[in-house]
Image (cartoon, rainbow, N blue to C red):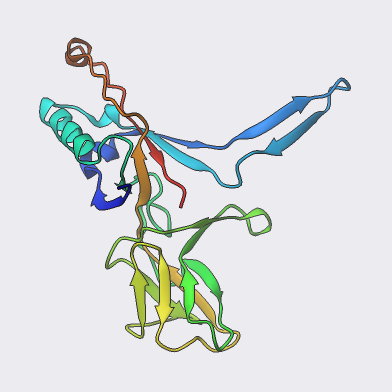
Length: 209
């Protein structure tokens, strides 16, 4: 059975990974020299080469064990992208006003955690589905709440006991993981090359939900 395993890839190894943010854009060059461009993907996808984080034989053993437990590409898991894992810049601490979730209408009780990138006119809105338990801080019109809401850590949905009033701005701050999987069903590791300092080829890719 395909499932999401609610476990996190080892943090120390992930910290040293080589990260990529990729998009899929189709570019057609016309005879006039102009271009036509078409975005094949609505959202970007993250990818990591975690072999760079494997520094010891014990690290290698840890990755193999994690790979086996996930059955290769079959089961997804939590991955921390150390370059982008908070509602704020990585070296800052989340505040309850970091990200706008929406505006109350007096009846809606559920809001999705999101993170915005870029300027206001061209912001990219990323849905956050795997917040770190205990990290989510919520505010209404700038006033932080100490209760009266729950967070689903498998979907990133924030549900209020009482719907925010019409016109009330709902915001949140949080840390988050990325749903991810191994990008191959085999780990090919040349131990001799590894001993000479070459990173093993171990790719992990974000899973869109």
